[in-house]
Structure formats: C-alpha cells, structure tokens
Image (cartoon, rainbow, N blue to C red; front, top):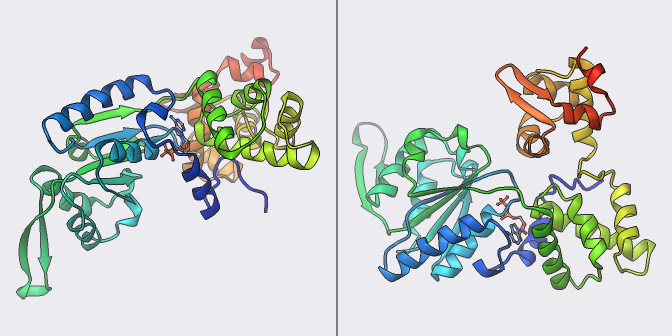
Length: 334
Ligand code: ADP
C-alpha cells in the first residue's frame, strides 16, 4: 500500500518521529514568540518552585505541539504522561491517570477537543483545586468521594480550538497558537534531521524539500526520508537538487507543496461549484475524503497559501487559486 505523506500514522512512523524530536528548547526551531514566553513562564515556575500553570497549544497537525510538551517536561525535570481526548473514555480512566501522577508532573492531552463533556466536568476541580470527585458503587448505595490529587500541570493540544467549551478554555493560564514555519526554519529542521539520520544532502536538496514541505516540520521530515529512499535506489544515496526534484515529482508533490488531494479539492470547487462558496461536507462527499482530514490537513495549508477563503456560506477559491489552476481573472468572473 502506498504510504500517505500527509497522514502517516503507524508505529514505525511514531518511532521515526521520536528519534527526530528535539529534547530542549534551544533545539526547537522557530516559534520564537512562544519560546520567549515559555522561557519566562518556566523560569518563574522554577524560581518560585511553583507548579507550572495549565497550558493550551493549538494549530494544525505536525507543527510541534507534542514536541513542545515533551520539551517542557525535560526543561522542568518532571515526568510526563501522554494521552488523548478520545482515549479517555470513562471518568475512571481519567482518575487513574491523574492519581498516578506526581506533584509537578505534566499530563499531556492531545486532541483535547474530543474529550467527552462528562469527563470535562470531572477534570475541572482537578485542574482548579487538585481534587477529584468520584462516585463509588451504583444505585442508592453509591457514594461520592472527594480525592486529593497531585499538583500536576495539564498541557493540552488541539487542531480545533473552536470546538473547545468555554469553561475548559478558561482553565488554561496560557494559550499559544503555533504558526506555520518559513522555508529557512524548515531548512534548519531538515539539516538537523539529516545529521541525525546520517543522510547526505546538499544545500539545494534541502532547499527543494523545504519548499515543498507545506511549512510543516512533520511533513519535512517525512519527505526527507522518502527522498533518501529514492536516492538510495536511483542515485548513489546522496540527495541533491535533481534527486530531490525527481523524488518529489514521483510523489506528485508540486512546487508549492500541494499533493493530489489538494489539487482534487481545488479543481472540484472550481469545476463543480463555480469557485464556491461550497460547504465542507459537500467537498468531503464529492472528493471521497473525510471532512476532518480536509479541515485538519488540507484546508489550513490552502488557506495559508491564500488559495482558499472561509466565508459564512462555505469555502471559496481566491484569485490566486484560480491563477494556479490556469484560469484568468476574466474567466473567474463568470
Ligand atoms: P504536533 O503535536 O503539533 O502534531 P509534533 O510535535 O508531533 O507535532 O511534531 C511532529 C514532528 O516534527 C516531530 O518529529 C518533531 O521532531 C518535528 N518538529 C516539530 N516541531 C519542530 C521544531 N520546532 N523543531 C524541530 N523539529 C520539530
């Protein structure tokens, strides 16, 4: 089966990401404002020997939210437990995770927007007063028990901040939005990764991959691996401009980093819906892709490129997108 560069998501992929994950803030490329902020935030907590305030990180997948949570744990020298919204199915799951933490530890909840609302309710007193209300037993003999839990820090991540309930949002002492990376930053990440993976790649090769990596570290690292595989088979293992170009062309990733599905979405909006506006569910149904995938992976990048606009009526192509699709302004007015 063909590996999907944008989705990935198997065990091997996780291990690959782990080997490339920077451990300290100084190795975390870009996101300067967040890093500056965090340095103050972490410094103050260390100085006052306080537990860090709860922190919310949001932004498209692959921009470094999980990495940042691990780095914070390392920098603070505390333990970290990693879970996700959909993995916490019952209040009991949450209780057992939290009661197993130690003071100062970090609880990282990925995809926090998918946390069940009834579990959110149990989480609130734990976040605010470090108390958990649990019910023991069933029916008339059920008892309410209030437990003291360790003073932990929750770091939550989401790709869809709009889906968070406002009481949950209010529980965070700091909220940071991760931005897409520029080509130079992606280049730095690629250089670092190629050193770790012992891949021979020249400056032009790095530049070409950086250009097509959707401004996203995760994609950059995946492309690097795929280009290296190509170089191993078709060249002498070294990656230069020509090898990178050929490999990326073979993967059908164009000069702007768009893949087959991005192009399918753009063409569909143009050809079937006159350039939009069209609702996300309609786009999903017509392309055969899941609307979550479109919203999380394709749409943010297309919007970042200035190809797609969100209006109240739905998604609309911009002039820039029409130009990319080879339509003149005249035609687009039709
Ligand atoms: P997210 O949690 O936002 O989906 P991750 O933290 O899992 O993203 O990052 C995906 C991959 O990209 C990881 O392998 C990580 O090493 C790399 N990465 C992300 N951000 C950076 C960064 N700022 N500097 C270096 N590598 C990064």
